[in-house]
Image (spheres, one colour):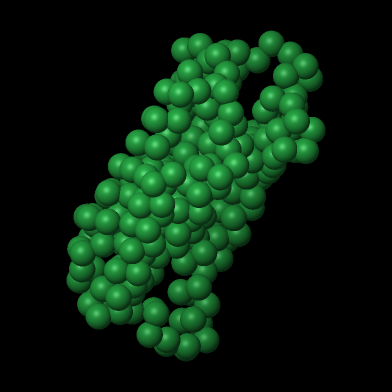
Length: 263
């Protein structure tokens, strides 16, 4: 548990350091948060590796999957923020990553299920897709808050820590595009091992995932064909993400934590 506590403290330290740095130099994005964030991500990944070695393989039950998505979000924030863009994301993402790691350490240990190469490929594509699109959802919320404040001419100090509206919107659609590709890969690799949708308890997960994929695809098409932006982009992004959360974590929660079946 020591490694978990250290990682959580480092995540929170990175978030606090980021807040202080952004308030002092909002446009320069001071980099002092990078070291604790990077160390937290390494420890987070290391804890999973240690637990999986003891479990005899990859554990992808509810809390483990949730922790992996939090880890993926933190890694994406590091990659984007280290380049001087959107470091503000870390203020929200790093505490989320800390909470998911704490949940996994406290409640999530299970014996690993045997996963062949196809299942492994599908599982990792899913984790990357959910992490990327979760970051996109956070970007959509930030875009909505910024547009709302500007419409109301409510120029609070926190607006200074956000990038220009056009840059934020561009990053949102690039993130959605990357997540859409990975979600497509998730659905395609899922087809490889589905034998019986009903016997494998995959009906709700599959239907909701496809609906989410269609929603994200429609948003990208609307952006390309009709120039969708602003409120339309925010609503479509959040609706599609809600479907995706219900598809994966909603179904896993019911199957594993309520019905005590394999997710």
